[in-house]
Amino acid sequence: MLYMNSDILRRLQKLNQLKLTDSEERDVLAFFEKQSAELESLSSAIDTENVERMVHVMPILTVVREDVVVKNFTREELQAGAPETMDGYWQVPRLVE
Amino acid sequence: MAKYETVIGLEVHIELATNSKIFCSCSAKFGGEQNDHVCPACCGMPGMLPVVNKRVVDLGMTAGMMLNCDINRVTTFDKKSYYYPDLPAAYQTTQWFAPVAVNGKVRIETSKGEKFIRIKQIHMEEDAGKLVHDDWTDTTLVDFNRTSVPLIEIVSQPDLNSAEEVVAYLEQLRSLLRFAKVSECRMEQGSMRCDVNLSVRPEGSDKLGVRTEMKNMNSISAIERAIAYETARHIDAIENGTEELVQETRRWDDIKGMSFAMRNKETAGDYRYFPDPNVMPVCIDDEWFERIKKSLPELPSVKKDRYIDELGLSEYDADILTQSRALCDCFEEAYAVSGLVKESANWIISNCMNVLNRKQLTADMLNIDGKALGKLILLVADGKVGHANAKKILEAMFDEDIDPEAYANENGYIVSNDTGKIEGVIRAVVAADPKSVADYKGGKEKALMALFGKCMKELKGNCDPQVLRELLIKIINE
Image 1 (cartoon, chains in turn green, yellow):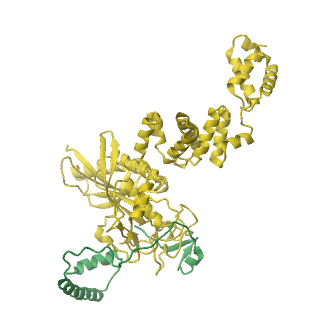
Image 2: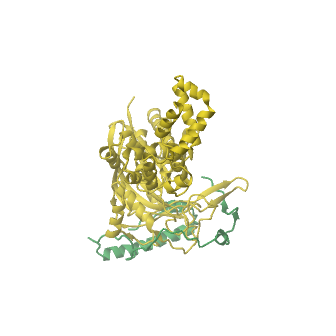
Image 3: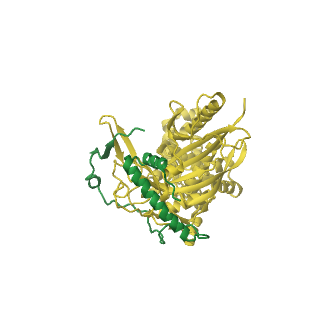
């Protein structure tokens, strides 16, 4: 059974820095409830006994590149779409931790 | 008062010695103008895909093998959720489910003897960028140059019980990884960083106490101070109830000599690790594995024993040389060319170290050609170049690639066997300083040295001292 309740949902909102309205919360919980039921039906229908855990969902391996420096972009190009910049920095609202 | 035991586990971040970043081709070089080493991938633009730098995997495996780990032949990358603008994708690409190396051990030695510290895992990951808080505009400025610079994190088991053991462990890690050229491991530049997980429990108890994690120590001595402070704080809280200990991350302030709470410690679940769908698994085949295994250097401790037992160096000399791979490499090359063990060791330990100190460089930064040093040592041993001039040649070797003999010829440093010229110089010096001549004849041995020095200066050091001395005495006594 997929584990979701209003406490976990609140914790996730905090971690993701999101604020859902009451009606959105109800929608999300309903969504998970439906998904859980569907997944539950899958897991009871498929026998996974003695099946090794997958390392990755894609049956392919990565390609690697050599350790060579290539400069393809200038700072100006990269910052062209930035809302705010200052002295070559991206500028964001002040963060206090 | 009950006795307490401190239980410490370390997370050590090591910046890898690569040219480019872990998932893109931007430069990984330290410094640079802000946001000059960036591209759409490392500044988190949507749709960009990471491509793994092979050298990062090479160095991750090398570190694993140096620390006696098992290498995961299929190793995968995972996303760690992280909401802070120094990592613009809002996650860090790291390894959680199948890190490159697991189950290692490191041998340390302290005043209490030998001990093995178990390594839980070594994982490869990307570094975060730099944030500058600007008071004038009341905003935060972001520099992504460090974002995606490759790191490994070495996670130990909680096997350490004192600051002394922690220092021995860190020094051992640094020595092994520098030897294998995995990293420069320079704490002052941030290429080696350490988080200390510490708890305290009554001696004999097998239950761990409340654990705190300390960050922001940028030297080994700061780590020692932080451990002493935090241990005392924990004991005080347990004994006197001065405060309630909670699991949290704390920041060490070395100037105040205190630690401060930063945030409640996240648990692994809070990071919501999940396999990164953008990076496929890395499969280390036999050929790759063997290539790295063959590239491993001889361990410093093995080298030291060999220098003492086979080459006959003193323990003191062997100890100094094996503190740095660069010194060992230079010594071995110089010895191979010159065949002179003691002289090769001496030239490195005294003359080369002097130059390094003067230039404010560390032993690891010794970059002269060992073979050329061997040739220089032979020139001195054969009496072709005097000591003073040999030191000048060595100095030049630090600045440019030179052949010592050719350089000595060009600069007139080759010892002259032209006795006619030497005699001419001696006669001139003797004629100009009758007082010293008279003093010597009167029994003052020091006067001879004064004359000898003047002659040597005139000859610019290019004279066999023995020949000069004999001729000088002969001419004075004529």
